[in-house]
Length: 417
Image 1 (spheres, rainbow, N blue to C red):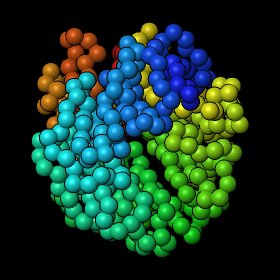
Image 2: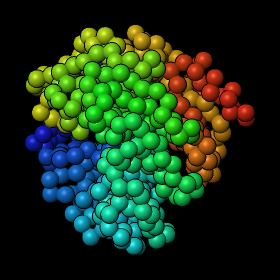
Image 3: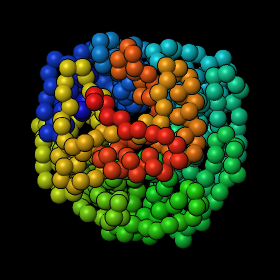
């Protein structure tokens, strides 16, 4: 789905991908003018945004209720488990998890310039004077000195932070379980982006065209991606099939097919915090003049368009409202055969199921620390359990190949089947 937030405030509008078909009468609740979208948690059905007045608001997509989570908020981030973290101007932290709001008893030592949500209800930030801060509600914050640098990126789970410096990239474990690792590069890095699994780091170089690719486990540069010029911004899709690169000069987006590491196309468009982006079903969504367009990333052929939608903010999400049937196959996945949720998917490799959410969360964290893209799927029915899964995968072959590498019992789970 795609959610359109009116630039001047109002009731959000819902669109169904891949054709950007309007779905009327589902979303309710009126938002003021939104400055930034913090994130959307599909499980709790909450959309979090900030306003020009530094208010952090939560929109309940089911009921349409709008709540004020915090005021004077200077930084906010959504963690991998759906926990929201907000830091106000006094460095106090408010977290919101499973609709429960909690004010942390201790303030942070400084206001973070970069903020990431991590597993185990941890907050990870980079504060001035080049220090890495790790905090949790039930323990005092810890601070570690890191290399002076520029761009900072973190994995989806916040278990590894990459910092760009003049001569390479330094990798830090926020909890200090591993020593920092430095990967030297031939040219100064400019922008960083982790793959969705956290296995690789894509690095834009300041003076050399193209991208460097760093392996987090081998801790070395593997290969690269040739591009027409230097790059200022990187943006990956949720499944790691496509990468969007913003050239250092000009308003356009370069498309990179990551499985083959090849630059495959270019679209003229302005870059904003929301768009251009690849949607969860593998479609390219971008602004073209006054309109917002949906296109196949492999062929760049148009699939859908919202006239006069460019002035508004857009949120691309896997959230599916009750009563709305998902598209059976995304157009991009059907044509390309990879990267999205194909005719079979989404499919998951299920490792366990339990009625104990805490136990399931700990198992998922253990698998994540082992380098696997693990998560917990909440019960869909009263007699269902909390499923610890890997994925999603587009085909059964991909899911089974991952399962066989686990060295433990597994089975394939498809929601709704």
